[in-house]
Length: 94
Image 1: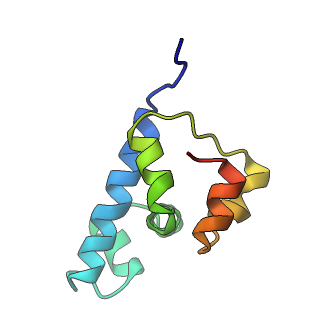
Image 2 (image 1 turned 90 degrees about the vertical axis):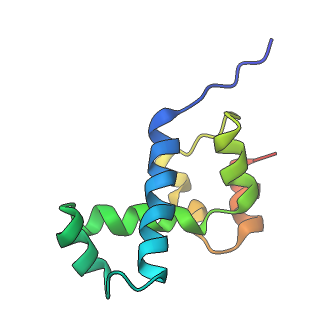
């Protein structure tokens, strides 16, 4: 029996992260601070969301495919690493 679970909060966070990154890339906002004010969200929260755009594509796919990807607080530094191999090794993504 497959025990994978869909995590709607994580999927929603990913969608928001990529949306906000696109707005920055398009130049609709000059900074994270400006975007946070316009979107009425905390700047720190926005910064955290944007870090999700640094996830390895295979990890994003695993999340969207409802594969069981979990991150414990001690794993956060590896998750936020820009080295995709390090991320995948840490999370053991498929």
